[in-house]
Length: 121
Image 1: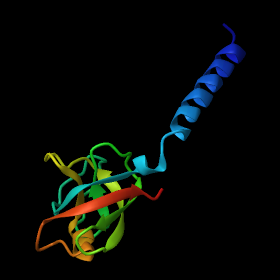
Image 2: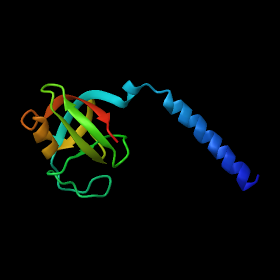
Image 3: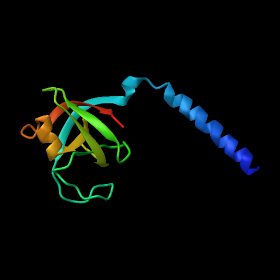
Image 4: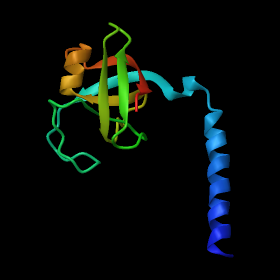
């Protein structure tokens, strides 16, 4: 098989997968559940140091660097955070946010709130 044939085969596969993902409804990009917050000062799964004063979050599967909007369903406040860690590892929780993000969401005292998240970039 020539390089040209392999390249065109890879291009076809990319087009097929692209078409499959294009048919996923926009609602699938939003996820609702519970959020908690954490303020560790250890290394995150991405390799950077956790900084509780930054607008960051842990998500089980989104790529590192993904920006997501987190909306507190209890009070309507929203923030944008950058995924730099993995977690949460508790059933029913969909995201852990930094302490600063939690402060802006108005959830420091309660610790856990109902949220919806969506990708912003």
